[in-house]
Length: 103
Image 1 (cartoon, rainbow, N blue to C red):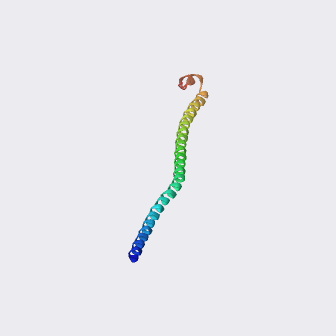
Image 2 (image 1 turned 90 degrees about the vertical axis):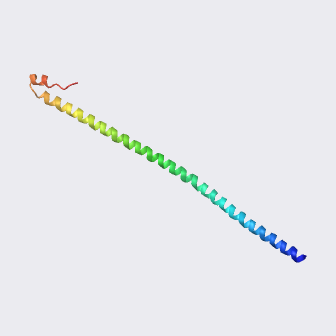
């Protein structure tokens, strides 16, 4: 009978050890998830901030190019108008009246 108790006790101990190992593996999985989560939050924050900055700089660059193109066109029109005014100023009076720039 003592042998049977020892066998039962050993099996119970082995079962407990196996269960403890199983719980330890499960706990390790939770710890890995926790550590990933701790690192995921700062990474997600950094990626979000960098994407927002990249988006804003892209918008600023587009706006700058549009403003530059618009001022270039306006500058060209103003230069043409000033060129016509300068040319008409050197013409005699009757010719000057014919070539007045349109307002």
